[in-house]
Image (cartoon, rainbow, N blue to C red; front, side, top):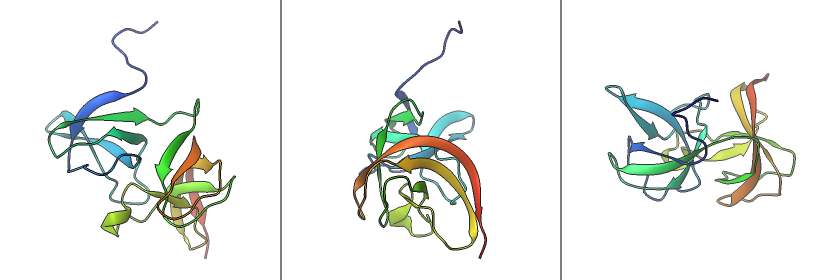
Amino acid sequence: MQTDTKSGLIRVLAGANLTGKRGYLVKMTHDTGVPEVVLPAAIADLAVYLVDDENVDAALVSVEPLTGERNVRVCLKGTCNPGDVLVLADPATAADAGKVRALPASAGTYRGLAIAEEKGADGQFVLCRPYAAGNIVVSG
């Protein structure tokens, strides 16, 4: 068995203001080698941590690594149905960074992060099962 490892919630510095971002997805990064989490900047970012305890920039937050062993609730952009693949919402709209959306029909490369387990409406914290589907290419 490995030692000095953790499961479940971890405490890490916020690399940006994450106030009001509980239930949003963030990615791990660093500031001069010190771990921190930030909102995704691109739809293909590996945002695999869920904000559980929010805080301001440079303060400690609690984040939960996404694993398929249990479902989670993540803030939804748009609508979804059970079974829909969920990907990051477009972070070009700052208010949508860290939210998920149903896999769009528009051409692009998206990272499948979860499967919806209930019907969802815009702004809802939708119940979903993390699933590392990897990159999904939608042709136009």
